[in-house]
Image (cartoon, rainbow, N blue to C red):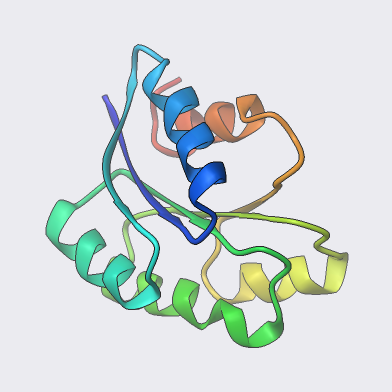
Length: 122
């Protein structure tokens, strides 16, 4: 079972993503948070298999949370879902510990497929 921590500031988006993941036989959302500091505490406490971090239109300074998550839980992959990310911002995200970047406007199937692969479930 793939246990996912959702760190989302957009409540409606988070509900949609949770509904999709929990509709899969091999996924569960083990914990959720909307706060960056709580995301780190929650990741340490819950030990998920994957952290999905939602940041709407990130600026360079927003990637501090992904770097902090990687320091606190280096073994847990961090996926970023965002809107309107360009190549430069994606490179910044990857250099700050993000393992994969997904566009918020896409369906969740590619995220799930990558999550299964990264977490050794395929």
